[in-house]
Image 1 (cartoon, rainbow, N blue to C red):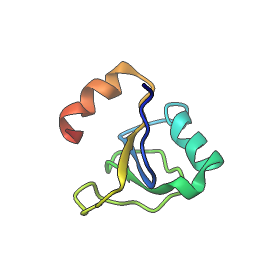
Image 2 (cartoon, rainbow, N blue to C red; image 1 turned 180 degrees about the horizontal axis):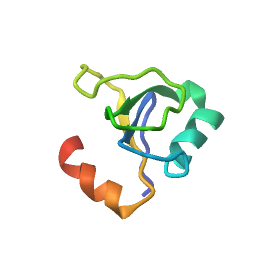
Image 3 (cartoon, rainbow, N blue to C red; image 1 turned 30 degrees about the horizontal axis):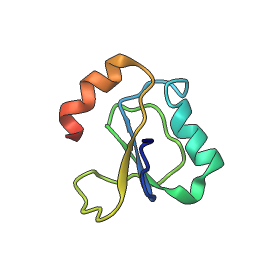
Image 4 (tube, rainbow, N blue to C red; image 1 turned 90 degrees about the vertical axis):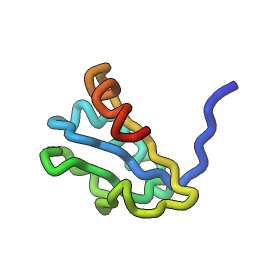
Length: 83
């Protein structure tokens, strides 16, 4: 059964250093901007996908955190932060 996440989404960018690594996030913003609420970036993040910044600590209610990773390094690094 496919995973179905209900919008709106908080796009997690972490500390991405290149727009190349954020291609899925950029695609979501380009093709479905109405589904994207905001972005969460670490202070050292060099990528801005054009959404408002929002802290994960903010009470999000039904907002889903969209984890956008393109490399195993990023996925492994952030699992403990998000969970």
